[in-house]
Image (cartoon, rainbow over all chains, first blue to last red; front, side, top):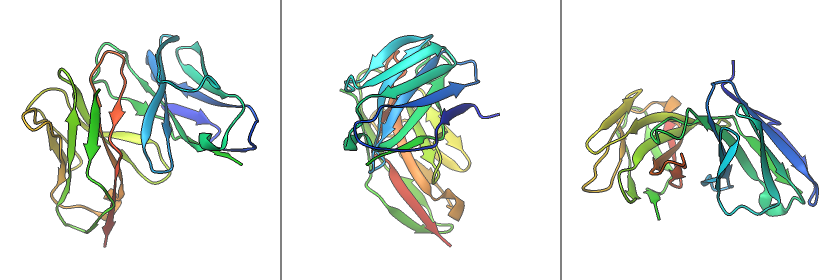
Length: 115
Length: 112
């Protein structure tokens, strides 16, 4: 069983479109994250949720809206896509916020290409 | 703010060579330190971690020691294999938000 899964794996779309990426974890974790990896492999956190509550919103444009329907799911919706949104988006989860040394488990990534 | 700096890559080594990837950090308080590895086309996997000064994390022949005096967490392996070719990320977590701050990543290529 895949611990953290993301769909789709690849997403190619036109500028101006709206798209969503879904993430699910079956680890029973309380905390989930979205990271963005740019073309130079640099990774930066975008959002984190703990028990469906937003904890981190790292100055991401408000075109990006995360939604956590339950603590096993954290979806990312992007409005009015721009060329600069092209990147690999990774979902991750960890057991809780109580211990910052908890391992984060990453999904396989979604490669978004905006044309 | 907190930050992590890794040595520039790519690092190209022959099989069985010794590996060092340097990592230094800036942080307030007592962060936890991690090395994550990303194999081609995959997500990140935790390689090893250390949660307090002088701790040594180790896994799959890789080691790193948390050095508070030099604010470093260098990754080492005595004898690399072709299968170790990947991107390696040093990271820290210093708050109760769970936020990981990553270095820029170092690409390792091991040639037979």
